Image 1 (cartoon, helix red, strand yellow):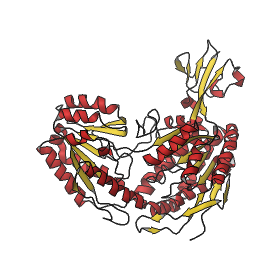
Image 2 (tube, rainbow, N blue to C red):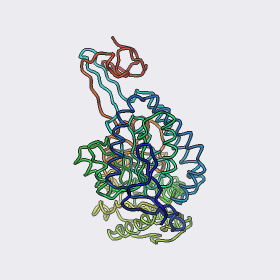
Image 3 (cartoon, one colour):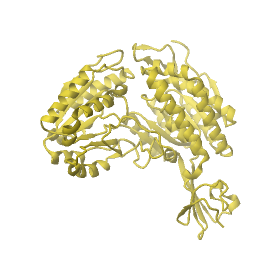
Image 4 (cartoon, helix red, strand yellow):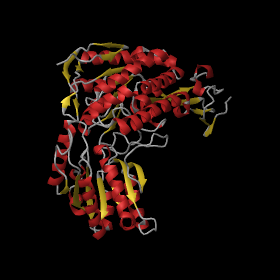
Length: 527
């Protein structure tokens, strides 16, 4: 086995004090990529935590301009090295270099980094609040200590632990980041961290502003999220691992923001099927199979009302799944997870319509899979039948009539998204009015006549939702500036002299930002 790649600790690339090692696989060949990565020891992780704590204090002197400059330089350096970064990500994930990585995900990554830079400068998101009569003022400010970011396997760039959304939000809020790379794409994370360190130096930020480790054992991971010096954690990954980390973080009194699992229910009402069944079938196939179904907003459950049109729709989708190419999955664990999840669903009463076979395509793969279950069976065991199959699979729930379809909405767990397709003539309006209020409280983002796959990086976006979609329904992982607020604390100042206050709260409003003054939003000075 080759020598392990170095870790980035306190501004230095160095050999790891490793307690083990691993080799990532190329999903298309099922063979190792040829690089070896270390499993970090508790001592190494604690050193990174301590360095981040020092950087957290030092960053105060560089905020916001130094942080904004770092983010802008970092975005430029990612783009300058895009060919190498894209090639590495393609080899580690099996995603096509173009258009997925080069034309879609990399531009999204640099765009959100630049949005984060703008948010750092525009401090209105800190919600400065002034009550002039009482002399009390408050605002959001960065938590003390570093933020640990656990990146997912399915977005090697846009959600990367040292370049993605959680990273950009934490840095823009004023927090140093300890990136815990996903084991599916450690090489991509290493290349991004190399550019991040250069940008840190160019912007004059503390050396430990960005650090990178690749893997820890479970106990060390729990220590990372619960350490007295850690400021918080952003995590995207499996429900089981996430809840294990949450238990540790809660025990240590540390905030942790989780994105765990989501089946993203879609209702297709009878009028919509009568009006445009073929178009909806095409939209659904594209959404469900895009990226081999490895999106957290993949439509994993579709609710329909029984009838001839529904039967024809199921048959049409099944034919489309059979005709579509089988994509490559991210890792052997995703392939085995699909096998286990489909078995769980069929054991609970779902019927396999098509698919259900592993190794059906190039590399790690699973055949395009469609299952159906009656509304009655779903209501008898809703928890099991909401098992997430992370990949190119969906479960169609066929309700006997509208009342049953409405009742199904009451039994969904929390999800990132929910969607209702209805006709344009109004025949579905009464059904929509019964379903939408129930579905609205189960999901972070409600869509109409649009499949959920894909997340726009705009300020109004909510990429969150009730548990188990996330660990806290009040926060989003996408959408700047709202995503920054996860890594902040509310600071209150009582009778503090104006010149001693942060600029955001001073009488003359030197930053000229919007503030809530005596209940009115204004950029006017006070006093």
